[in-house]
Length: 607
Image (cartoon, rainbow, N blue to C red; front, side, top):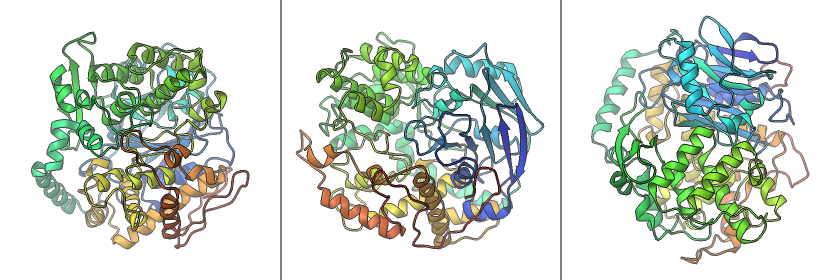
């Protein structure tokens, strides 16, 4: 089938061996690629109950049919594994310059299993797989490790992914980094690499893809490019990046503040794009094949962090360290962002855990003095987490573990063990549903449903019809993830555009209904994985605080009856039954719609 290589590389680190697998067209017709293919491979190559940090867990790195073609926003790769943070499904995506070199190796995915006894890094090309000694870079931060691997490999146009000390030390929310500041791995894919003693992977090659209709693809490229030049949303991303969200979300009363007690921050003006431009030299930066240029490449021009250079901070980092921890200096947030990137840890979980640690100290549950607004104490906390020292050893295990140990489970904010993004669900009720149902935990990216609620497409307080619209967003974004395309192009890739792109690349003519069926199929397979791994009813609800504690500034609450109504509607639309009660196990998801069943014979079961 056009647009795919039809090959998957399997690497066994225990035996320093590798082999290729041919993937049949029926798999691509059912799952497209990207998220669909990654989920298929994850399910096919793991047994139920596998310890995420054992040699039996696999790490799947995948591209999509759109990768390395003339498709706007296609310079992204994906990572799939069983999460060491949640024990359930893990997916993450990152931009930068890795996806194209990954595609040019000639593989649609790389499945890494086993574990090396000594630190290694992989060099993967279309010709061979090399296992390099990584003892000399084990312990180095992500920037240093990436530089070292790139210098040693020396191949032209090499894409490099690495982990930092957090991943090496099995911090359960460690990420995989590339291009210094691009992160993949919310829920701990970096820790999975660390458990395998895999410091990094370098990709390079010269394999090309064939597309079905190059003329149509060029036409789509030109049409979308013209739209992008004049689109006001695109212009706003170029001018302000994701920090444009700070005033919008704060005005809506949905900016989580003081560890989820308020929806507004009275010093939000210090966290905006304008504040960043006042204190830093800022330049818009784009991934390849992108006219959005949402990234802010900054250099701090004043204060104690003068000279600090980083791509960021993004809105979520600002929300989690700024709002939740009450830090009101954008350069200090850049400083904390830099620490997390170097150590290789997720800024969103790190910011949430810092806020939780502050509350734990206030309630005398810990003796570690960390207070609101204390940047240096929070910075020290991040290093302790990465090294698993003192209180850091507890927080490195994640919010579920820490809250249970400190008897603060009613205080902790998470779904499935993953903390929410910086959107308050007592205000944005669709985000409440999104957090509860997202397959990797309290994820904002599965649906990005803050967009229709903040843009006036559907009122935040509205309950009727909310699940239906959310499912439509979720299905469409699942197709984006299976191609793999950037989230910020969601308003430019509607169903008709997605059909045209798929037709131009693969030759398959799929209408909206057929694409929704593929999306439903993928969603069902992800749910099968989570149910297989023990997901229960407590994993698809929200923390009780959202139902019982009013926001201090607005007095808003999420009525449980309204949430239950949305959740019930969601299950009905999906054709799913609720998960079993805690303590019970179940088989596959109940499907209300026909789903294609594609299996791969292996020692690890079938999908």
